[in-house]
Amino acid sequence: MKFRAAVATAAAVPLALGLAACGNDQPEATGYKPSTPASTPTAGKPAADNTAKPATVARLNRVTFVPAMTRAIAKQKSWHTTGTMTVNGTPAMTMDGYQTTDPVAMSMEMSGAALEGKTGKVIVVKGTAYVSMPGLTPAGKFVKFKSGLNSQLSELVEGGDPTKIYKSFSSSMVNVKYVGVQTVLGQKLDRYDVTVNTAKALAAQGKKVPEGVPSTLTYSMFMDKAHLIRRMSFEMGPVEMVMDMTSYNKPVDITAPPASKIVSQ
Image 1: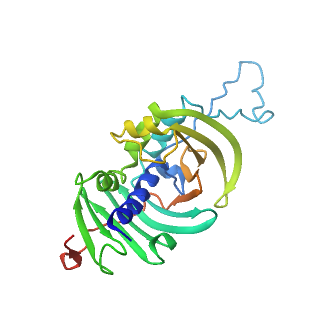
Image 2 (image 1 turned 135 degrees about the horizontal axis):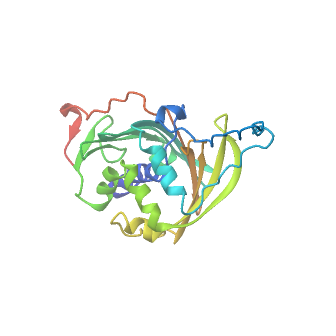
Image 3 (image 1 turned 90 degrees about the vertical axis):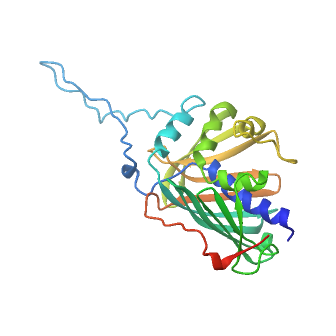
């Protein structure tokens, strides 16, 4: 695999992760508590039977979706992500890794046909990316890059901070559609299809639209009652990606590879 293709493959992973919102195995751990209106009985009259009519659930819309998602993720400090990318229905790559937000760091392994059946790894620590990729480095070795060397590597590093992507939703969102309740990962989740203007989303991040990217892209985001996204999926031509986010706020230690594993470009 050529250098450009290898880095492009690696860069696509954190960028996609950034576009996914975050879930939590236990919503109460985020500090988010849905509010319910209090019932105050009128003197001399029995209190209303609030169980007779189920409370109306307010669905998120184009105005409320981003604020709700942002509030929900605010206390998420780490998470585990697994994902599968298919091309024309054939598995092309699987991903398994961890991310943290303070400090911003990422450790991600990738394998599959897109990597010629081999395994690649990307580690991002303190603004530096370490890439181990078939065709780019010897097995088990990493090439070290500083953010900003080129656009692809810059995206690789910055893509580890999802909050930058979330902010772009405000200016790029075209539509939010509530689809319904679906069971995902054994839980009943609200599915929202979120369509964004690709150029505006990338412009908000200071990036240009890559060749072949459509003008709009729709993400299916599966949200729990605490407004945390536990699954994200999207299709772009023959490519389909599905990602699940679990194990939030659990201790994660991401460190740079030792000097003995670093090789020159």
